[in-house]
Amino acid sequence: MNRDYEEKDKDFAEEGRDVLQEMKEAYEHTPVPEEGRRLVEQAIQRAKKDKRRGQAVVRLRRTAVGIAAAFACIVALSNSSAQVAHAMGQIPILGAVVRAVTFRTYEADKENFQAQVEIPQLEAEEGAGELPQGAEEINSSIEEFTDRFIKEFESDMETGGEGHEGLDISYETVTDSDRLYTVKVWAVQTQASGAETVRYYTLDKATGQQLALADLFAEGSDYVTVLSEEIKLQMRRQMQEDPGKQYFLDDEEFPEWNFERIKEDQNFYITDGQKLAIVFDEYEVAPGYMGVVSFEIPTEEIADILQPDMGILQ
Amino acid sequence: MSAVKKQQAVEDAVHSTLVDHYERYYRLAYRFAGNEQDALDIVQEGAYRAIFKCGQLKNPEYAGTWIYRIIINTAKEFLKKRSRETLLGEQMPDAGKEDAYEAFDVNRALDAMDENDRAVIILRYFEELTLEETAEVLGENINTVKSRLYRALRKLRTKLE
Image (cartoon, rainbow over all chains, first blue to last red; front, side):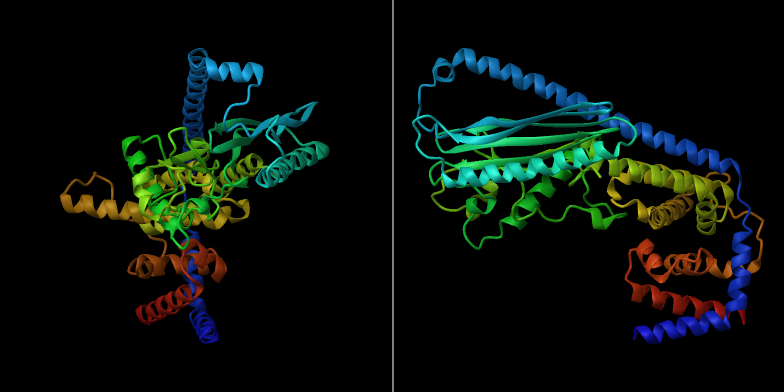
């Protein structure tokens, strides 16, 4: 079949060579207005400016969120004396099994290369006994995740290169409830603009195991499809409500970039409100200026495929 | 290479390809638009989209075929819009008119073709892309491109005989 077409293609090309040659010459003689080159350069500059503006808007939003979060923290501390007492005096309260501590730091400041890295590790709380197996697994995953960025940075630093390059890795405890402990580790690579990669690691204190996305759902349920469809719905809604938001979705021009499905082990965490949040890295499902994006899944949308008696989501 | 570095490399590659091969993109747009003003509009809009969306292009090596694809899609969209406006009678004074200039009547045969068949001939024979690259530009598989070529060449031959 293939061979057949190729031969026909060749035959026609042979026979029609004169005609094609003539057509090609005519095509190449299409007069090209020189002013177009300047117009194209202008269009390029306009696109670059619009792109940077989009990035600036998101950065501003992120800063605003940061301020709000810090503020919320202060309120929580002054209103909840039990937690303050715990933090100050290390009084064991129910559910304190592990905590994240800085295990390794790495700093570099050499000409144009700056790095500020804090790598956490889970350790057993005092009096909580041995470190659960799931926590050990999380520790090696964190190391693997962060090592990759440090190696990349170090090899770039060795080869030199132009311009500024930065690496920031940090972490925070996202959840420490009776049931779950979640640590978020993120890496920001900076050059002309930044790229952020995030991983959430959750320990199920009830089992001592790392909580996987699949664990939340009944065996054999197609959670990948259900979650993916819900996320697409939210993406469409957001794009409709806010033209500044853009996801790789329903793009006819580049269908192969469209978001289709989450990974079976897609990044996720459980919010304070005990809802499932699905997280995507920068560039994974949206242009860079959108940054890291997450989608909170209403529990009623997934109620019928949840693992019964899990009791994690509400 | 870091993700940021890659993105910068991609944007640089798209930028220089757009400028260096401006003539190619203009000629391609002109073959679809039929007049200078519309062809210029298509090339500018295509350049804007290519830079704005280049976050989607992960490998700078594909910048060339990727831009052809954007120009062709922009041109198709443009033609669709133009024919709608013509139907509604909202035509701009110059838009949509074909320039009197035609280097060779033979290229008119191209204009009678289906848009994708036309694109295949231009990309494969005038711009000398490989079959694989042509398929990539059109987002079609290689056998579809081959049958388009076969059909388009046959049509050309009967027209010119």
